[in-house]
Image 1 (tube, one colour):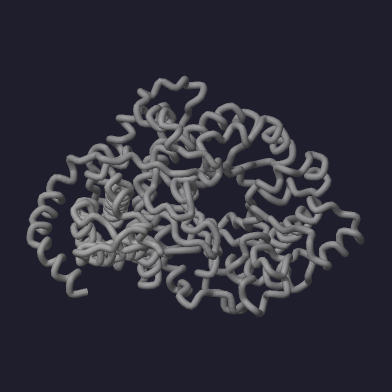
Image 2: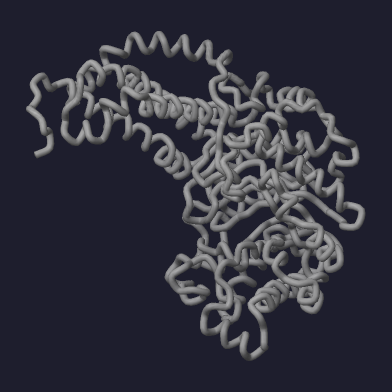
Length: 541
């Protein structure tokens, strides 16, 4: 520790001067183009560079038959499964998205809703007063509010608890609820009632029902399927229809929305016979740039026959990897372009009521946080404005977004020098700095000198060439100091948006592992450099 501190001191004065210079020139530097891997398409976007360049360099020469401004509802998704913002931050965020063209928000509460009749709320959930405050801000900004609660799959937040273990579809997996047990419907109806009671002016409720991975597996479901002569698809439809009828009968002015992915697997005849078409409006979702191949014409024909209205769902963040902490704007812009092109083909025969711009904060209840809301805000702004304007050129789009968010030029390319002035911009800038710093660290670790003289083998035997060790770790102390400064800056700024639980989780997930790696390297370096005499070979006896 003494050796490490001494070495840090040697570099500190020089580093602090260079760091100030680095900060002042940062806006002129453009080192990186983010490369992310799509979880949906399982394709490395760095291998599709031409797609990204086309998004950023086209001159808006798409044909008008393919492009149009979206006239339906434009709903922004707030995913409270992780990193729930403070109400004070939403007081700035919600008027901003209204200015950007949003007409409403869909709030996915999960365990952040203050349920009173069920012991399923998180200990740090919003209070009733908090939610009333959020709804008041929405009302003042004329934003529609759609509550979203999962009612089939993605119910980990309460199925993980001992009290609700018995209503899991598969005992060891807490994702999916058993649809045929009486206790299941009792819980879901209470959830629906409490949600609607606190959202008396909402015209819609979204009941989830996507990615129901385990269906018809438990004894209760098998017995029901035999008795009713149901297939697993009919079991699914019965559960959704039962919930939708409950909402329709008790709250006739509320329309039920569901995710559509399970409907894609079900035939026209089965959908028609179930009566689901008069009970719900499906939300067709796909978050990749190549949506057409996943949403074929026959699906649109089926939906237009069964459902009076449909919705679509894109993504502005949280769809390129569960551990990503920076948002690839070009990827999400391509997703929205693909949606506009596809819907222009089908809008004459399919009534598309609205689009939900999803911004996932976790992939499920147990995963780590992906991009934070302020980090994704430039992407959200870009895509909201894109939806609102017909055939807009990329330069004009960049100028309009930059003017509203007070961003410098180049932010569409994830330019590390782009400074912004929107609510939470410092968090966005900090995440980009971390990404670029991490790239520099990886470059140091992957350099030939590190591979040759600072390898796992070198570390294991404790023997290396001191001059090459110094060369391999020349920037190490700068990285340690810079990362420490960045951590303190981010914590300070995140306190304006998030509670300590979110801040601690984000830092532990994204900064601490890097710092641990650097300090391990520093310890190994000191061990190498302290040695002045070496054994004869072989080093491992």
